[in-house]
Image 1 (cartoon, helix red, strand yellow):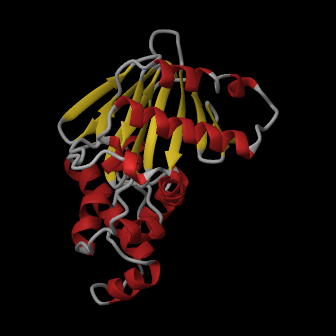
Image 2 (tube, rainbow, N blue to C red):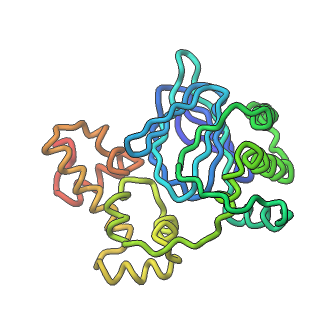
Image 3 (tube, rainbow, N blue to C red):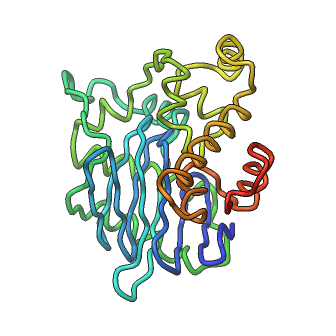
Length: 273
């Protein structure tokens, strides 16, 4: 069990996450690295993608396609706090699943899914799958890894049963083409991404990413990200009169103390001034 915040708890079992949020809304700026299936057990989940907003209510489920950027707002509904179950289908798991399929029974000439956020229709298979996992919210006993893998398998089968277009989505193992590093960073510096994840999203191995980054900046990737976030924070504080408590989260810092120290080191005075 991981206590991620004073009013938030997260349990993680073999790529299945059980999340609680006890107070107010929680905004997460996420790059979705792997396909994800999300079930809202209580409260509400808002998904913001560019200009579109999709609301997922209690008892509903949504599929999030990999390699996309989505803002999540996990919020209560009345007195009912948010809690949800997140299933992550990583590349290796899906490769193994694909190898077990009878290729002759896989639908042919299916178009790829264009949407990256897909609210799923009501399905008895999906509902029963997530209902079977609800007891783990309150259990202190860790479930067996084999059992959690079976739940992941059941999740994939449920998606394939709902819509055959998921075949082309889940089993697309094409490598990402290299994309411009600086363009990606300028669009995504505010997100909580590791250097490994940034390398992945720009279509590179970690070593190739570091080598390519040296060609375009004298700074390390970590230093570049900090300075870029601080520059935006400075502009927001000076020109838009935003509160420091709002700005540090908006530009991608998770810790206020870290932000304040870095800001003062960069500009010679604290952000409050």
